[in-house]
Length: 381
Image (cartoon, rainbow, N blue to C red; front, side, top):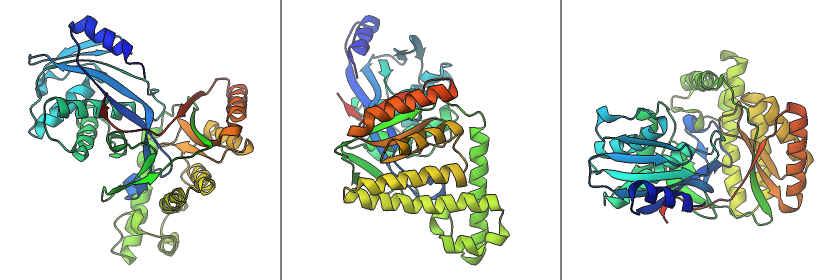
């Protein structure tokens, strides 16, 4: 990422130079809709993210400039000082969450820019929060551990940006490690690094540029389905707290007591939790063929059982299979967004050309293509 523009803008606005900090966006290779069911996710930090130059200013105010938006904001650090600009609320929220935890942040100047594509499901907001949480912790010697930094980012979303997100995005941004994905247990928050070094393959996202209006209500409905199934199973198996505790045998026992729709939703989640564990075993052995099969299995489940795909995403998944792509699936909550694809290098150019041409002809708009590499987490540059 080019830090020259940020450096120049910072010098122009504030007449000085600060320190540069970077936090990445993330992909999730497999494990979708498993988080709120107590399962696992398998994210990795990517080589695209948010870059900020920051320097204390000796005042009780924050002066911030968003390079990509060409917008400036100035605000205090008390609760009543919340800025009106939505991007500035991320910075303000991080400061407030650190303060609530007893950390003392003083006024600072900042200019920041990002190369995480917005709206592509790569967590540009988590990258922004992580950049400032990591940087302020270091600049003001606050001694906050990485786990708490991720929680500060999550709490910022909850309390200042109105998004009730899980911890995965911020966790991946802070904890990312080159050549590795992170298997995160969403219930215990225990994690381990899983090797991901697909020599001879490329990872690429194809953005359907579809935004689904009903995503949040449909998402809530699916959570309710999962909870209804857990309630039914719990009557026979009191130890089952979340779908993560259940298996297909337990689900089949209550088949007549739940709706067909709720059964399908739970079937997907139970299978997806197992698919992720199988994919991790395959990664340990460097068996990317099996990993790819699991990705296709996820797409099928999300499309047919969980019903969170759409025509455009299913089309991209079909093209991937026809072009010999090792693995492909819808990434994220669904209802639009990207497919993530694990592509043999010798098939890459043909796949991209075929997908872009076919998609544009069929849907009248061109999909966006984002090649990504798995990289390191938050850091000072």
